[in-house]
Amino acid sequence: MKAIVNIHLKEGVLDPQGKAVKHALGSLGFQNVEDVRVGKQIILTLKDDLSADEAKKEVEEMCEKLLANTVIEDYTIEIVQ
Amino acid sequence: MKAIVNIHLKEGVLDPQGKAVKHALGSLGFQNVEDVRVGKQIILTLKDDLSADEAKKEVEEMCEKLLANTVIEDYTIEIVQ
Image (tube, rainbow over all chains, first blue to last red; front, side, top):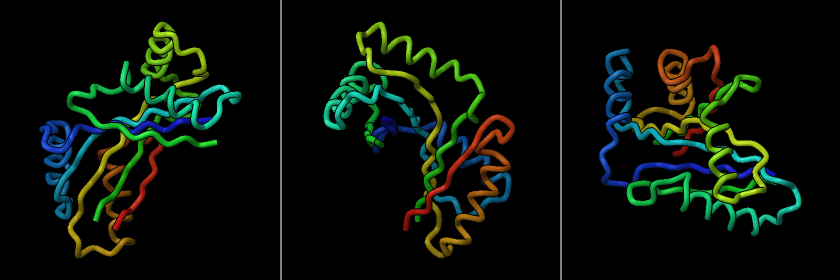
């Protein structure tokens, strides 16, 4: 079983990395980019004897305790069986 | 229009960041984690006058030129209208 966790800065939090990527794309000639947000995607392989609900609950706890800085970041979790 | 780009190390390429996260999760008491892969998710907001095909082609070019290190990384692109 896999869990896909996407972590991004909250709306309104300045994303310097996104700004830098946008600027670099512009200097490479890409003119159709209005905004860039850079975040993390973490793919966890979990033991198969967990139910989807148990897995979701455990991964939520992982996000709250370690994977995301919940003061400035939001996260989404997708369980893939 | 948005493009969601997921970038991960290729299979077989050592992921020290993933190893570190796995180790940290273990020391926090999470025993159901078999593997962790850490990658990037980049969300691009593109001008609306592009077609989905044009957008996909342009974002592919962005990945090849800047966003991904195609020697060690794979990427996927999802266009969201």
